[in-house]
Amino acid sequence: MKLVRNVVLTVCMLAMAAGPARAQFENVGVIDFPTSASGEAQDHFLRGVAILHSFGWIQAREQFHAAQELDPDFAMAYWGESLAYNHPLTSQMDATEPRNALQRLAPTRAERLAKAPTDREKGFLNAVEILWGDGEHVDRRVGYMEAMERLYEQYPDDPEVAAFYSLSMLSAVAATRDLSGRLNVKAGTIALKLFKDNAYHPGAVHYTIHSFDDPIHAPLALEAAHRFAEIAPAVSHARHMPTHIFIQHGMWDYVSGHNQSAYDAARELWEPGEPMGDATHSLDWGQYGDLQLGDYEKARLWIRRIEKLASGTFLEFGEGGPSEETGQGGGRGAPPPRQPPAPPQPQQMAHVGKNQQ
Image 1: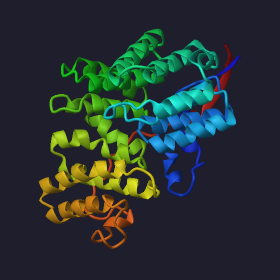
Image 2: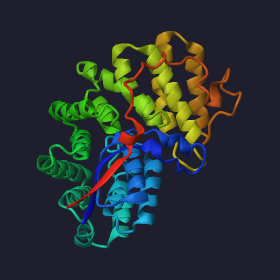
Image 3: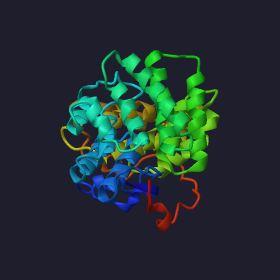
Image 4: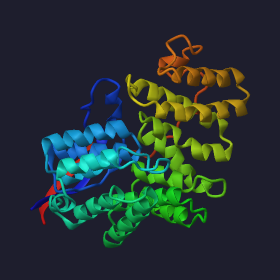
């Protein structure tokens, strides 16, 4: 069986979005995730996983659905979709839609696992079978972490196994309310190593930030915080998330500016009927940054925004002050981004080779 190997794909290679706003998801990072699929199905899958690492739920599902349409038996595309319905850190992990996704692959667990052609893919699929199986969400999340730990022990050098294991620990911490900090440090250590190996991995920077999101450990995540928004500039959560670290350093210009850009990105991507979570999440954080800066006019604007969002829409052009609601980044902005290291060259970004396995 042929297995796609040595995939290092910057997901800017595809611009197959549903409209101009979706096309902003050209740049979402660099991941190395070989699977048994190939061609366009694999490309959509890689793009979906990269967006998933930045918690771009709707857009990730679009990519996994596209992969499934091209290859209906591509088990990993259903695995990815199952992870794109719930926030792993703040929700109670409603299993309804993830189970529906897995059942579209095959009606039983045994049949689904049979469609995963390698032990590694079976390991990924087995882990989500536990996560979306029977039982209370706390037990399911801890069981998922334990399954990912076993997979990590089997494939310690696999970057995607490492990334999802790191996230599974953070999810277990949120579920069990473990305040010891031990799992956070362990998750962050793995994420930092992944960041060192691949400075453009969206999960590496994202999970580093979540792992060290406290005043004592925040300095460990400062570099990752600066990098995250550079990796995925159009993903609202990726624009907001660095401010979890900036706020611990009193970097109020960055807190204000990054949450403004997160709000702008969410507004640009939003379509009527979709959730507004990405937009609302940046509101109180942005306002706090502006209050610390003494910018009370901008702080009042954040209040007008949440009042409008409560009615199911955004402020119209001209309602938010000087060019604030145009999506053009009006008002106080973050300091200019630092110059990042040169990204991989195109031939490195999409290098795909095939070996027999």
